[in-house]
Image (tube, rainbow, N blue to C red; front, top):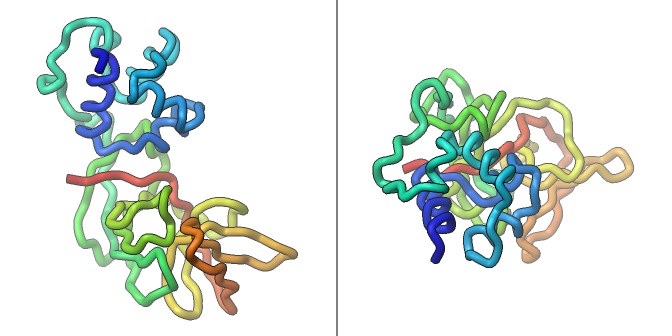
Length: 202
């Protein structure tokens, strides 16, 4: 395992950032990040610079013999505190309460990775694998219109859920990412927000 590979792995684990979220912010395919992490490829200098900006690191972090355990986490200037509101089922819609006046807890998340985000929900179930693992925390940006082919938090006549939205002939379909699930065509639907990322909170 090369030095850059080791340091990048440690930093992502420390911050709870997924490969997909990093890839989205870098503007590259997730496989590019996977290649950096498995050591089959090394990022070019311009990508290392971008990594440092996103992960709040000095350039020397990847070029010098820096002990990863001494690197500080994001600070108050680079994080934002978001409310954790409730637990949402990623399978069939279920009842829960989403009320910004009723807060379970708060979590600090990186501003650079999740700008303009509004709140967090805990997720249970495997229907949105591989993008949303069981027990993931989904960061939500409030939006009230359906975005085609995006993962969104919605409320149907049966309750709340997170699903991939598809708009077909003017109708909204809720799709599972796990191939074992069947699409849902709700009778009633209210768009609550877009999933802008998942985050591991320790």
